[in-house]
Length: 396
Image (cartoon, rainbow, N blue to C red; front, side):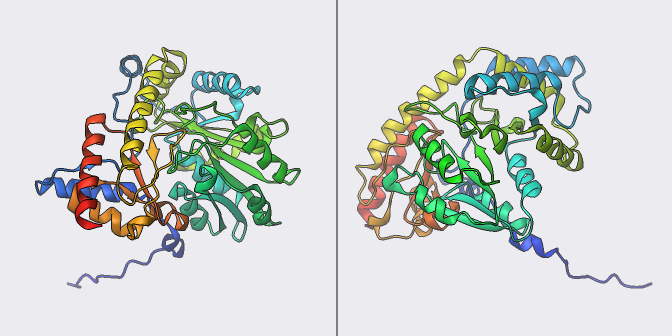
């Protein structure tokens, strides 16, 4: 009888270019410490700590009882696509039709599919750094060249349009924007957006505008590059339900784009996930068209926590934190501690029981910063400030 041979796993070369999202790694490490009996304050994960609103949950349960448990169209249920088109038309002040909407399981597929559809090997994609790590991961994975543009603290974590201009080349296929921004909480103003459009000018370059935090803005109003005349058909808008309605586990996001591109993104859906779960889409209709009180209440609570936590951080030795204008993150400068970001984040988890992320989890320009999520109770945030103070008094 022949013996079984243990062969080496031979992965495709592209797998070596695939990155990760450090938040989940830190979350797993923090949970392992909790199993050992250590008390951890979780400020690492970007997930609202609120329950999904009851009207949305009830709509999903009702959908299940009424048989919404089967395949749907790859682009999404027509009623939800129509609801999203109406919502985007109202909020971005441009006319959007349902055939420009593609519904996907979460926000990340729009990032992945857009880069897959538009960027060939050797093409260039400009993306914010520090920024959501999946941008760079997917650019590398498809064999394109990632071109980071630095978000500058002195500009409230905005970008320098002159630098953007210098980075655009004949190989630039896509520019990624994110506002409100993860991890910094920065918000691009209408003036910022219009300056960016003037730099892009008439070049045949698409823009992926990640607006997943568009309803979580504390100062001013959200403004989309899609709203600029001439840019609707050059923009892929990414938005969804996870952050706005505390529906992270429901896995439902969407992209809005010109119809011919939407057809190709739909083919990628057909080849990957087939479709987004039907009963969650029925709940999505209720989320968009139903009572929005929960959204306003959640935003107000995040703002209250932001105010208190930033004030607390600015009293900590070696910490300096600007006031974020959106999302639910704070991004303090920690260079004066004398510690590197990764070493400091690891020490705070192990020694102080505070789970946060190193700024370098969001790119090379994140060195010198930490990211804390304020998606936790005010009581726990205040306790985290106390632990930080005690730790810095002992260690710095």
